[in-house]
Length: 102
Image (cartoon, rainbow, N blue to C red; front, top):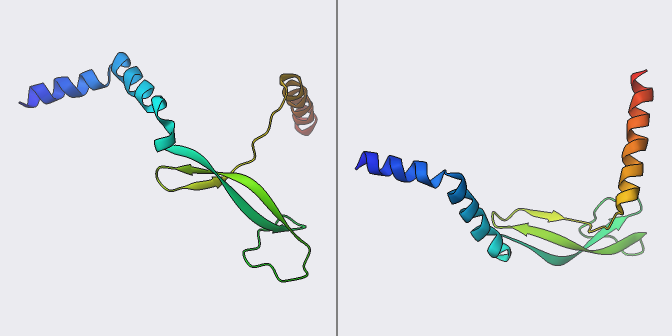
């Protein structure tokens, strides 16, 4: 009995078994991770205000909220960055680090 359970446990950790489990997980991501619209009210400094006073300088932002199966929530900003812009930014970062080290 114990040996059979050990064999099953070892077989479940085989690369092909892990790949199959990962493919099944990816087949239905909405059950585990999804986006929902949300609104956030912030002041000029970007501080979130739950009950902003009337007449204040607040803005309401409509952003997607990423919700995980374990009930964690993250407000996200979906952005598109070109490959060239990312490469240029990385080069500038490396040059800035070089001057900080010197």
